[in-house]
Length: 66
Image 1 (cartoon, rainbow, N blue to C red):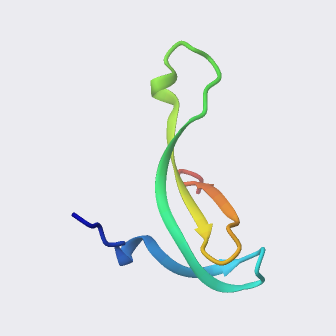
Image 2 (cartoon, helix red, strand yellow; image 1 turned 90 degrees about the vertical axis):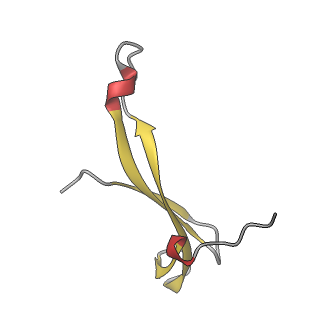
Image 3 (cartoon, rainbow, N blue to C red; image 1 turned 90 degrees about the horizontal axis):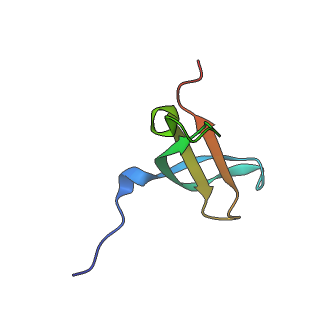
C-alpha cells in the first residue's frame, strides 16, 4: 500500500539559507531538555521542526516560548 504525502505538513515559508519563500516540511517533535537521568521524562517540550525542501536547512523552535 502506498502512502501519499499530506498537504498539511508542507508549507511555504521564508528560508534564511535561500533568502526566499520556499516549500518546507513541518512537523512537531518532543525534545528532552534535562541532562539529569532522574525524571527526564518530565522535561520533554514540544518543538516545531522545519526543513527547507530546496536547500535542506533545518530549524527547531520551542513551542512554549512566548
